[in-house]
Image 1 (tube, rainbow, N blue to C red):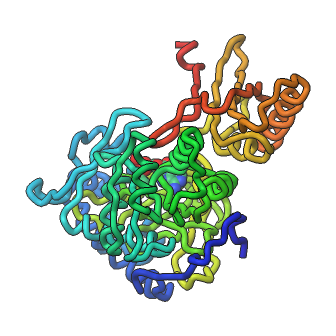
Image 2 (cartoon, rainbow, N blue to C red; image 1 turned 90 degrees about the horizontal axis):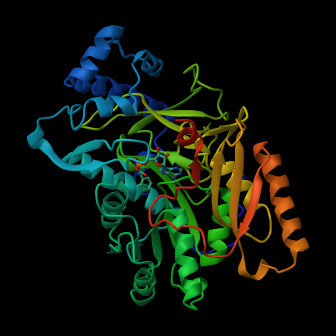
Length: 448
Ligand code: DLL
């Protein structure tokens, strides 16, 4: 078993399970999934979009007999939501809607997702499951630094924490200095937000002469954006806490699709509510277990907006090996990239996570970086800007040159591309209160 190479081992890394459904025997789980899939298809018939799509493939709820029949169902893509803007995929009367959230719109026009009251209850339970798996107890105080608004992070985690019975400080995003005061004064033990924001928080602490390791935080639940194992190590070292990963997306519910247990070697997929396929994004055929592919998710219990075979564009792998925590659900790896944030440099596919991995291998760098891509003479050129730690900043040209060369070598090794490396002063690159935006691709702008 590959335990995470965490540098802190707080005594509280214990095994807790919120819902017995998480440990259901696999054959029972499969039977439940087939039953729910059949119900989902019947329910989705109420949505004209799905009704037409099913008619085209000739599928009826009765035809769903095994899980393999899932593959006969049509895919749903982001554009289907856009084409039915704002709420054309509802399967219930508008009067039954209890809440509406929206995707962040980082990859185009925003889209909306709707929840019935029952959907909200399900969602809170799913968030409670991964929070408890990651150590949350009723006596904790949780500082939520996700934005409260259309984004599903704030409210999603909020009601999950409430379900567990812990105290919530709904700080929301922004005003980082004040957030530090809140964490200190209200003695928060748990931080919820994006991983990149936690490093920003640590940064601001240092600027104010506060040792971030002295904050009362013991745990953190991070999600909403990709991060690497090396970044976990860095965050845990900077803030002296145990960091857990959780994953989700607004189209299929929000946070709560999957999350880590104390083993922290993959995120348990809440399979009684979601079927996750891992497909080759080009052929749309399943990849062998353990290989990376695009996650395609079918929600099994959503009332307001059923979601069938949603192409997430997120790249990860699946692992069905039994987990020491006792949960019987399969696990997904970290998201290593998105099919749409991958950039191609002179024919080589590169994910920002590979650049991050390369940078964090080099002593003296920080996880604050930016990737800029230009095409000055019809050839792609990549510049990676990275902040270096204040103590490693040096006036000696030779020392800085050597550091740059080491970074370039690591990038070449991990990502297979040659990059110009610029070392920049500490605290000079933009920080993000929500999801970090690391890539500036100027190529389209230049050519169009
Ligand atoms: O980010 C839901 C969420 C909020 C999950 C808070 C976890 C915590 P969207 O705004 O619709 O929803 O963005 C979904 O964010 O397709 C992934 O690309 C990315 N993402 C979410 N969680 C992770 C994670 C929320 N743990 C998109 N690791 C997804 C990597 C993540 N990427």
